[in-house]
Image (cartoon, rainbow, N blue to C red):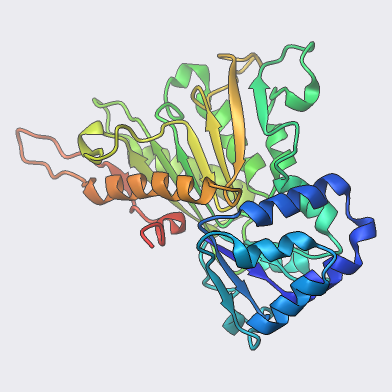
Amino acid sequence: MELILDKNFLKNFSLALSSIEKVLFDDFGKFLRKIRGVKIITNYSYQEFEDEVRKSKTPFLESLLTYTNPEIKFDSELDFFSDSGGNSGRDPFCLFFIETDNTDELSGFYGYEYISSKNFNLKWKIYCNDREDLTMKVTTDPELNKEIRFDNWNKLKNFSHPINAIIIFDLYVFGNESNQKIEDNLYPLLENLIPKIPANGKIDIMIITGFNKNVNRIEERHRALEVCLEKKFGKNMFHLSLIEYDKAYKPDNSPSLNFRRIYTNYFMIKSDKSYTYFNPRGKINENTDIVFNFVFYQNMPGFVKNELRDISEYLRRLENSEDQGYVKARTRFFPDKKNRLLDKVAE
């Protein structure tokens, strides 16, 4: 995971403190003081950064030089506004603090989040750990405060962020067709979670789920979901992989893979039950909780990497089978096992 820290952002952030909301300022300070397992890249030289820390009105910057085992790359020659500066082809988990008026255009093009001193209040409130709705109850009970009541998939838009890749791990998202779980849950989940496809590349979507052992329908499911996504985003704008979960391929050193997870390049979303929350009548199938974790916050980088390593090892072991007469062929993944969130988890 990488955090890009532009020196012009820090300088202007210090000048703009009067306009920064206090709760967001405090949370940002806590974020920088406690960040772990993230490579920080800045266009300061080491000496320039020390000088900035001494004169800065944001004292928590000093923690970047003093916390345990910092991994900071200082390079005063870096140009973050060019591809050679690293916007294109970076780690999929990459967060930019960069001073520019074109943050929305950059996000729309590359699929990363760009935060400047001018849009800090608007952007950081998405990732702030002081949000009331980081844990919501899946219920339609009107007596529960609406901020923490997850009663429809539109609530995902409150966490709308640039996305370049998604992994959904839920054994039941394709199950029980009579309950319309796909149309009422998986489709709107994806439509509300993905703001738009980055103009500079496809979004990777991987779904790891269960399939009926007696019916090999993974390719059929792939095509149906592909058609749905094409209607929303257009053709050739995403790479979709479907993976069957089979415990026979589970890594030996993992007590279990973590079902009911959604991973994006900025959030890990957890649920106590399957993401098949709603039925066709708008009723809740089962009351449960849904929890949103910013993947850069405190110890989350190591936590997320560990889980993705387990998934990566599972995929390494998983193979499609061939028809051998007495054993029918089975397609356990289609068309491949690629997702960029898994590309660097071993590093």
